[in-house]
Structure formats: structure tokens, C-alpha cells
Image (cartoon, rainbow, N blue to C red; front, side, top):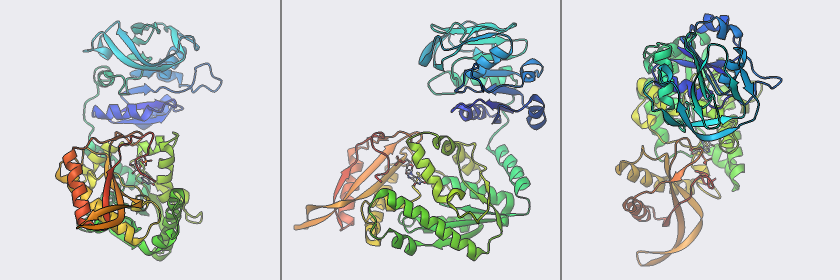
Length: 513
Ligand code: XMP
């Protein structure tokens, strides 16, 4: 394995992911670990020092156990701050804030052995630094530069230590993955042996060690994250796991039944299916403000959970959550952060009463969405879940704009079913991040069957996105839009108008509320 020492970079986990893409296991660990601890706990074949927001001259600048650089014999790659720290500790010199570089830069390779093997001598890289290495430590040679940074990459081949000032892990460094792969295979001599099968094996062992004979409760939403986690936990601890599916009454048409049947038939796990629709509809009576809706739904989740726990006579020591890595970083970022934080407050212990004491289990928290999907496939989670588009915790309640009642949710379910059917029929379901209908709180005039109508409007929303932080409205072919519109107005009598949302995120969000 290769470990990443974390110096506070937003991309530390991305480095680990890139290494895992090379089929070598990788984990991010605190930079405070000593060489002894690292050797004892991990036996890594390589160490990567991540970037970070600090300057080596800051008073509390994060440090490194000098033994890692001096006597470990373990190959090291320092990235950005990691390279500067390496230079400083090994006897070089770092200059503070003279020539800053942010964004794309042209990088010129001076020496293309091992780390840069197979690469063109000039490439685009992503830079984000204020400080620079101006004097390399003894034993190091320059292996690359940019116009602004004389030492943009350095190497001490005898010690197998390398530093790059740019970020190879981000997509803005198009050849960055080749550099990481070179480090993993050519410098560290790792073998590509890690895959989802070994991840499952390791996780099962770890879950069993942590949980022992105790019980685990998991809030199941039917999404890919919580269902995959359920499958993993069930494989690890079988009947010690209880899943709780709280149906708030705002699911897509037929979705609750599909999820419950799938869990019962495919996995035979302990499932508490709570039909709490009445409570949720009651809680939303008279409410139209989007934030208030979200809050009410969140609170109701907690209350239902509490009631059910009492019924279960619970002695569950652990609460499992399908937290993914992006949830962890997003919660630190303004904008999507708000969503991520809210997502979590619906289900996690943060929102639970203080007399319920759980230990939290988050076995997926190092993974990205596509890794969870591969894990789901490995654990035989059915395709319709693995590839399910994201669906918000508050469900259709935030897609029925204005007042929420059974009748309006029913109208939306029917329209939304048609959107789903047509999108799947056209073979574009997986290409879209999300596609759905929104029921608007306005009525417009129409003519249906020679009669004047005055009824509801739905908006269609279809977006493409990498991670929901930004999104583009999908340029759906007119034919698909037309068949959706025709079917909705023909099959859902309460709707006489269909419009298409052509706004990106930002400035709009994906959901309307
Ligand atoms: P927005 O509307 O903020 O949505 O652009 C970004 C992504 O998050 C989903 N979303 C939620 N998911 N609970 C969730 O589990 C929520 O409260 C929630 N709100 C938005 C949304 O569907 C999109 O994929």
C-alpha cells in the first residue's frame, strides 16, 4: 500500500483515489504519524506528502517526522507543500511568497527517468502555491521547471525521494495520472493487486473487529450508498444488522415497494419498514417555504426514528451511515456544503436526541461515488440501485412547490414516472446526473378535448454533472422532450402544460427548493 500524509489539502483523498485507480491500496493518514507508527501500522511501499494551505514558515506549520525522510528507505513523493517541507527538512531552502502561481502553467521536464517516464517534455500542470523551493537539499537534482518556478520538480534518486510543485492528482494536470502511476509502479515497485474484492475482504475484517458481538442499525434510503453499505455490513455481520427504511410518503411512484422487495428478496436482512407518510403529511400542513419544509421533514425523521427505536427496544451500539468522501469535503465548502450538511442532518446522529448514544460506523467514507458503484456491483446490489440517480432525502416534497398534500404528490408521481420511463427508453438514464419533474404552484389556461382547462404546469429538469457541485442543463433531443410532454398531458389529466428548465447550476440549484 501507499499512504498519503495529510497536510490539509482538499485533494489529499483524491491522491489516494488516484493510487487506488492504479490497483494499489492507499489511505490518507494524519501527518503527525511517526515513522515507527507508520511502519508498524501500514508497512507502506511508498509515502506521498500531500499539499496544504500552510507555509513552512508559519508558526504552526505542520511538520514531518524527520526519520521518514532520513532513514526510512521508503520512497517518497512530496506534492506542493509536501515538496517544500521535504526541501526544508532535508537542508534546502524555501522562499516565501515571491513568485506565486495559481492555475495552469507550462511545465518543462528536465529529466524524464522514472517519475516522468513516457511523458512529453512539455505539459500543462495545475499550480497553486505561494512559496517556492529556491535551493534544493544536498543530493537532489532539478527534474522540471516552469517559467515562474525554477525548481518545479526535484529528485534524489539514491533515496528515491521526489518533489513536484504542481498537483498531479487533479484533472487540470492532464498527464498527472501517468506521474502517479510512475511513482506507484516504477519508483515504489508496487504490484497492481488491489481491487474491490480485496476492499470488501479488508472492510469485512475491520467491521467484524470493531463491531464484535454488538448490533448495528442502518438508516436505509434505497440509494446506492446506503444500500451498498447495507450489503457490505450484512456480509460482515449478518443478523447483527438491522436496517430501518422510513418511508415518508414522498418517494417516486412504486419506489418504496421496489426497495423493500429488493432488500427482502436479495439480501434477507432484518428490515424495519416504517410507513410514516401520515405523520409527514401532517407535519407539512400549511407549509410552503422551502427551508421550513426541509426542517420539518428533518425533524420528523428524527422523531420517527426515536419512536421506532423505542419499539425496537434498542440495544444497538452502532449507527452506520453511508457517508462518502465528497460528503466530508463538501461540508467544508460553501454552497454545496449547505446541501451536504443538510443531507446529513436528516439521518445522522447530529440530529438525534442526546440520550441515544451510538457509535458511528462509516466504512465508505474514503470512497467516491463511482467507487461505491463498483463496490455495489461487487456485492451484487441490483443494477437499478447501483445506477440509480441521486434522490433528495426530503423526496418529492421539495419538488411539489408550494403546499404539499397527497393529491399534489400523486400528480407529480404520475408525471415523474413518465419522465423516468421516457428517459430510460431513450437509453440516456445513466448519462444524466438526474432527470425529474417538478410540480409548479401555478395554473394556466389550456384546451384539452375542445374544452377550456385551467390546470397545473410541470417543469422538467434534466442535468449532467460530475459531482452536483456544478451542473449543466441537459440538451435533450427535442423528440424526447416532445414524447414526455405529449404523454404527460395525455396521461395525467391534472396537467395541461409542460416546460423545460434550461438553467445551469450555478446560478440555479439542481432541485427547485
Ligand atoms: P442542489 O439542489 O443543491 O442539489 O443543486 C445537489 C444534489 O443534492 C441532492 N439534494 C439532496 N440530497 N438530501 C439529499 O439526500 C437533501 O436534502 C438534498 N437536497 C438536494 C440533489 O438531488 C442533487 O443531486
